Image 1 (tube, one colour):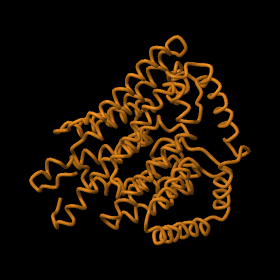
Image 2 (tube, rainbow, N blue to C red; image 1 turned 120 degrees about the vertical axis):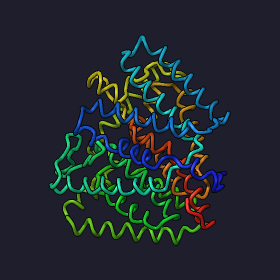
Image 3 (cartoon, one colour; image 1 turned 90 degrees about the horizontal axis):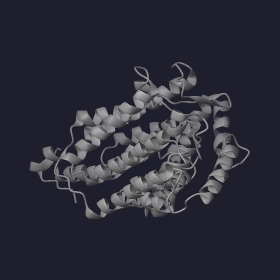
Length: 401
């Protein structure tokens, strides 16, 4: 339960300016790269995130024994896998992936233990920030905004990175914030506008990983929601409007978009044959190694590839990356922590639960466990659920938080 005593309101609320600053840095690595290098931008993102989550947990927070037990076991698996991987993996790869893993443990531990509430003004700011991100991406796609080096092309059309620094990070940010905005519609209707713009940006991003989370999340919502007919019709109407707008805007663009998503499961589709080969190789390499505790810690990480060269490839699956790095036991404790976070989302916040379910399934097919915005947004979802309970309680009581 969230304490809504008016005397505690100011103590419970996190600083709105600090929260807004965190959202800017966490979601806008591309903007940072205007001022500095890519690696320094990653460092700024990481340090800012650690500082913000430390701030969240600093005030009268109490770590639940069940949470501490899960995190401790996962950390043990990380450390043990690091030690047994040294004969097989470059030490820089081990160190870089350990930073990702320890960072994940820390932000989830902090968010799930925090007694603070994210100010609603910061959630509004997040909405405007994401909408600006979408508009910037559209500007890149129609040629009025300079294309960044981290954008790419599909059938002659741009997969934009916007201000996120990566065309792979951009759709993950959009799909998670889309579900967040849908959930916050129960508090203020302006979040409907944020959700519609975010959805339009997601659909036009040419990202199959983002669409996978969206589709799986929507199916989860449909399966769990008792008011299914009303909500399905309403959401289908919004999708139809967006599709019509895209169609009228550019017929060729719409056709390529349609073909991109239609062939998502085809091995002949661009990128899928390489992904299947990576999966096959990863499964074979896993079977030849230490199964219970991984002895290839960090060998197939994105960060390792950036630091050590292309021979440190990726396996195109977060689950396979975890199995190779942590083994079956470590992978189990990783997802056990994720499930614990899922259980801390209110049962009434079905959109947030849908985001979690879709994201968890997406990790099977895409290597997103190293994406900083993805990690921090996933860690914040249970805290945002608590935040929404807090503000709706104040709204019903007629108070102003």
